[in-house]
Length: 79
Image (tube, rainbow, N blue to C red; front, side, top):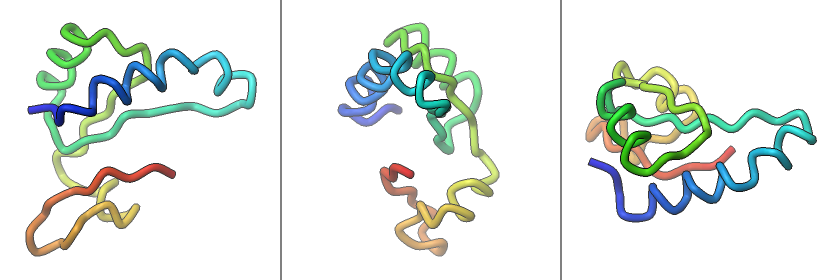
């Protein structure tokens, strides 16, 4: 389930995607949700940024996005 701010953040990044492209930056949305959840989110909210599934938590762990590995709860992080 998407957090209430996730749709507005995805929309904001999508709205500025051309600016990121001009800076040679790629914006990716990553969450622990599965690909089907991401497809539902995309269909409902229409972001143009790419959404990646991290069900195995590898990206979250590598980027220190967990509140704690023991609880496996990801935080909202920007890099």
